[in-house]
Amino acid sequence: MGGDVTMDELVIVGKIVNTHGLKGEVKILPHSDFLYERFNEGNRLYILHQNQTIEVKVKSFRMHKNLPLVVFDGYDNINLIEKYKQCDILGEKNTEYLDEGEYYYSDIIGCRVIDKQRGCIGEITSIIETLAHDILVVKTTKGEIKIPYVDAFILEVNMEEKIFYVQLIKGMYDDED
Image 1 (spheres, one colour):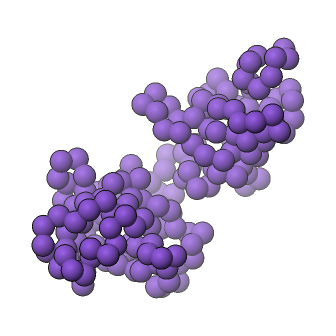
Image 2: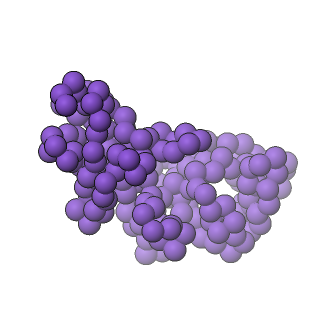
Image 3: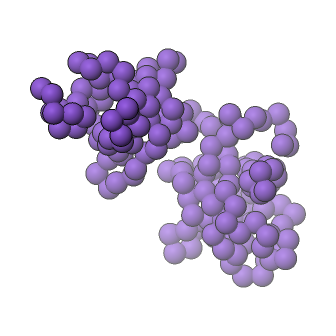
């Protein structure tokens, strides 16, 4: 990997879904809310290709039909960039982009979930994005449950200990009161 960045310091910010034109421009399906910060000219990103990271620098960025179009320095020809179609784009985790109480999905995955009444009920395995709010998918000994990421259920988050304290209602986990 280029530079002094480790995989733990990176987060997926998008995926190259196609090329656009002949001058190396790529369409990116974003996985970040911070498009203008992430894809700003001169920014350093990484293409994940065959389990290797390739450091790239953004040469140009523009929006087209609600998708970012990006050209990377040294890849200003379709023949140079085409092999990276369907590859993830990684960027450095930057907490400046997050408001208080916001976390990167990659930091949430693997957190333990502790219910106020039941104790530890499982571990967060994924997150589902909806228009209303995110939903935490939790693997438990009884199977998989889904917990809306809203204040009514999420009492406290302790990222240092990787714990989500929750209060579930009847029927979410079991039939107990």
